[in-house]
Length: 492
Image (tube, rainbow, N blue to C red; front, side, top):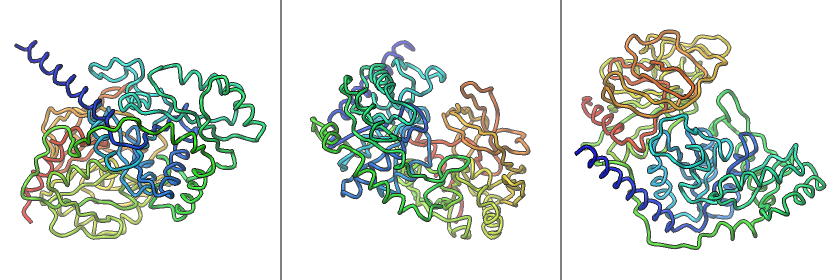
């Protein structure tokens, strides 16, 4: 009986996969493209934003996506396009969810553009226990997503220290996996006309289209700091930067070659707009959840917020930097961000700290991840070793340091929380440069990562779930559903 059940489950998975691939092939899109690089730092984000800015300037509706768990690059995408960028990460969701997300959010637009992560073939390989993964390319790589979604790839190459070798690089990336459709290359950081001619001469025998050329002086600097680019809300001159990027998009790309390569030849039946993994029945009556959203707290997956609303939550956005806690809410959601950068202002808003503390002590369900966890601590010690008082619910201090904690984590829940039952497992992601002075006596999670020891972390006090692990709800709608149900138990 167990074998028959496994066979039935496998048949169901295969059927669902074939159905998704069929819908992707028939997707009503004018254009689709994935922007990949030979490595990190070659200019993928600059190229992506230049394309998005120019397309927006031309009045073309474009939906952007980002491979991986990143929060900050999607902020720039959204600022340019006016549409929330969606993360495509099969580790923290699933392969099926990546396909469903792409289909759902690509409806009604003229172009879907996916920015890759790291190098085209950089991924997790066999470092994670992913069942039934058999492709000869690393799991969760840009190449993996391109194959999963049947996308042509535009490869960005940093040419600042190359001439003839560019041909070997382009040939290698094209031939490594013949099923990757290399639409062409973008030559970035080209030094001179003579340099460009050498690159063209080297690439000519390969017949790989050169679809863009960016000169060294074309580089546009976006400020960064300890976790990547400075978020959009903190850049007062961002509109000027976007204007410069739009100019690059107009002047540095060969649109006569690019557009025909991107056009889709297949136009099929429309796809459903309600694709999701699992049951998403609306919980009634609706509840009001206070979501901290400002310059200090802005790391949220758009899908998480959407799913909460689809399940019946009314999201009340507020700022712990400047506001008091909204009235009449039944739950609290603190995402990640940069509370360490704004620690003084957070500490000075004592009304917010006190009202959050009071709400939690009286039993309000609270979900806090990374930056949100830090805000609930007794103090934050910033990079200058200055201490700032926070909410004080968690009996520990968040201390900034130079050490980066980064990677995927498989989290096993050790005790019930507002969003999980004990024994559940989920994939998440850590990305922070702080540590806690005291560990919980009864940790919330047991964490397993690749190339890292098993650890325990996370806090479960009162009705608080607080952890460094960022979670994506997309493939796990039971998480926001349980959170909403717990929130509904709070009396207004």
